Amino acid sequence: MAGIGLLLRLYRLDWQSAWIDELITMQVLSMDYGAMMQEMVLDYAHPPLHSLLARWVSDLIGYGVWQVRLLSVVCGTLEIFVLGLLTEKLFGQRVAILAGLLLAVSQAKVYESQEARGYALAALLATLACYWFLKALQDRRSIDWWKFVGASCLMLNVHYYTVFVLLALVIYVLWNRHAYPVPRLWWAGGLLVMMVAMLPWLSSGVVGVILNSWKPSAFPSMNRANGATLLNVLNWFNNGKWAGATNPSPFWTFPVGVALFSLPAAWGMWQMRREARSASFVAVIWLVPMLVICLGSWAIGIIFAPRYVMLALAPYLVVVAFGVDRLRVDMRRVLIPAMLCYSVVVLRANYFVETKADYKAVVRYLTSIEGEGVCLAWRNKRSSVDMGAAAWSVYSGRPMLKRVRLNRGALEGAGCGTVALVRDSFSLGVLPKQELEAIADLYPAQSRREFRGVSVYVLRQGGSGAGDSN
Image (tube, rainbow, N blue to C red; front, side):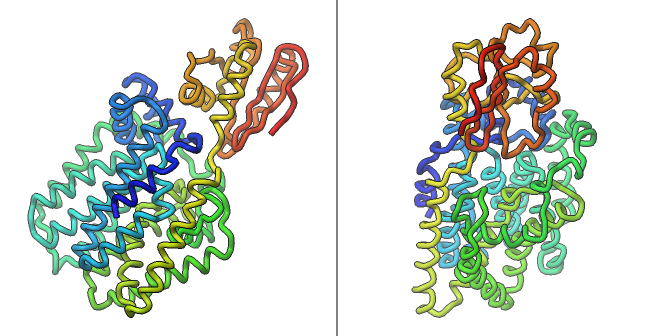
């Protein structure tokens, strides 16, 4: 199963360009360690562990998107193995094999494992934490408890939302406190170790940056859950992204996904009533993170993205596998091949539907006009990360172009014959209209080139503009 998962995650690993979040990772990795840590504090979106591991990988095997994505491939593959261990402890080997196989071919998990971001690492550590937590409760061995604490410390330093996995585990053990009494020393020691593990990051200044910068109303609707969010998340869990991860799903994928995955999951939950402790464990680590993240985003504005709830996908597939295993043999013989065939066919969207912004094409275009004395315009006043510079450093193989802020004071005397402003149209909603108008006399020939998900504003000191093109 892990071998199948590895091959699916390696296939066409680098065929799409890095998108904005991946380019942020790559530009941070190109800095020295001091600047790198300062940048992560200013960005504040994620704790630093993934970036530090990615930097180690880059130092070891080379700097590039493929290399950092390879780290996610390894993490995603290991998660299959760990889920098998967890499921076998809960429901036996047969269910473990099917759950691992479903995770190996999961469309969402293949996508997650091909990103130069920390989500696959967070999911691996969360699954490890759940496994060692359950093992500590059932086997009563302190070594397993401290392994759980160690995995928890690591996952909290990868993504903030992994705290909801811990919330789920606390709810489970409180509900089953008579069956699984946890020694007070374990609780106190575990909490202390986790607090100490987070202290370096929390004392870095990131808390002040978050308090000064984060406001729920500052994020557009794309970062907020709504009434359809749970349905769309479930459809992605059911491998329903036929048109690509960032595109709307065709309607027919919803009933197909429900028939192949959600109905077996519902049957599995019904059948689990006879195995209450195992059932409640899987249910809580599946439902609590997903519901808290979605409802928290809708109610109070915590930032939402579908990839944030992928922590809940592995336990969901355990429930699906359990439900399938409790069907009659003749039904299993039909359903399992149908599930696997559908899952594999849908992977065409991962491998052949372009959804990420095409920064490779942007760099090819900038290279073609490099002789005009191109400078990269820079708008971000809070962070030193800029998409144009990040894409150039990753894909050009050339020395960095001169960078200059997009304002009159910086441009006067900068010696830039042509200025290029790279704007990610998927994520950055504010048009640079005022800045462009303010320097229209310095750069009267202003045009825009369009690539998939990216606009390049080209400002020339004289002559005619290049015009808009796609």
